[in-house]
Image 1 (cartoon, helix red, strand yellow):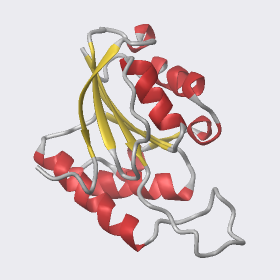
Image 2 (image 1 turned 30 degrees about the vertical axis):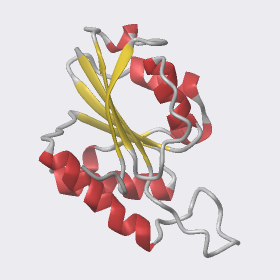
Image 3 (image 1 turned 180 degrees about the vertical axis):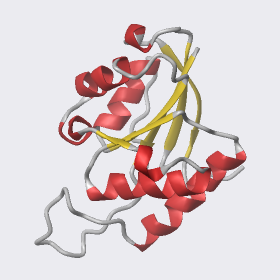
Image 4 (image 1 turned 45 degrees about the vertical axis):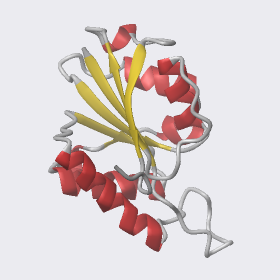
Length: 164
């Protein structure tokens, strides 16, 4: 079985209108919600063997915060531009290329691609993954290379304002 955690980056700042989309940082709310959500994952004993992120500032920063809280080495976070520039097909190619000895991975990305990818993998329908939302998808596959449409089951969806 393989487990995939999809994470939408935390809330980003639109304060500097001259700043490129790629370089936008997290805002104050994002800087609070990222460690909060990472702590929730730590409490659920989430320990991915691989973390992969978009290199965009807001996604990379979210991944680094999560890594620090859950004890993943920050230098081990892989970056793929295709997470920033691509959609479902690009994300699927990244997942299919994950090392087979890795049983759980976490991908940090952007909307609408991260929501669309979740729906693709689970056959479900989520309108919009909120900022800093995390979805756990379990797949009854022995190989990442076999992952495809509706091959996973959404186990849970957690997000900063969720209670209970």
